[in-house]
Image (spheres, one colour):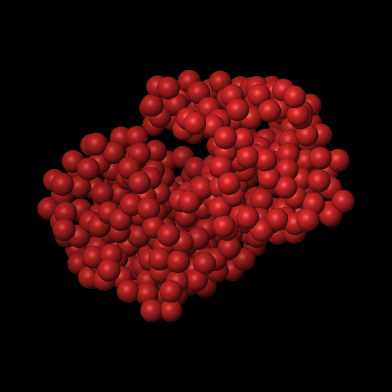
Length: 362
């Protein structure tokens, strides 16, 4: 039996949500897939050092492509036209034009259906076409939450639920540097942290407004980690107009050890996103014992359980008051820090890989 895995998403220097999942599930599957099963990783460039160590029964197929887009739809499809594996696993929510009859695809969310305004026109067209094809052609669909399964049934019909299997994601806690220095990031005061793209879907604009209200009562900073996304223009303008602009720190992409340090030293983590399929940043906060405030949406409840505070992401006053209350209440900080670690311990890549392998091998 030959299993092919799309690994181009995982083979990235700077990995966020989808790419991080692809990397971690492939690394975990290396320990799970039996040695008598041949595995081929399909990539567009040589494997990075953190992926390059392969079991004896694993190999890599580099399919060079000169363009930044459509590698899977064109280059990988061309390869599959002549050389299909017996089974194909696509962890990055893509499907080549030509693929094996037994194809397992990971669907991370349906946000582009629920909040189309949060995506550019071409992105919406692409994602709609891709997900429709995934639903039609995949023999099995894996997704990370029951919420995602319900969304797929909502947009593509109840019958699709028969081929959807929920496999919760895992998380590997990366410990911060022994001597983490937050001053190198321009942080000079106690701070609350938010991690995710600075965009409409992540509700960054409401968080900025809530922070500006909260600053009237307490002298703290807001640290934003993440690249600009759709809707960033108005957000940047809003930050500039905030009377406390000097205490809003934008850091862009941060490598894992330093990001863990930022989590570890934050008074609280705030995740007011209006739509999530899972929520990696929330799980990371919980695993490091950072008290967390999350949007009151279904997927985040599946991740956080009772170990964090939930708030209406569209209520600026409620968001501001909730952050302020947690920041000022050391007892609740200790409580949620302890409960968060316990909650995060329920998620592991070993569990995710074992269940994923059961799906692939069935």
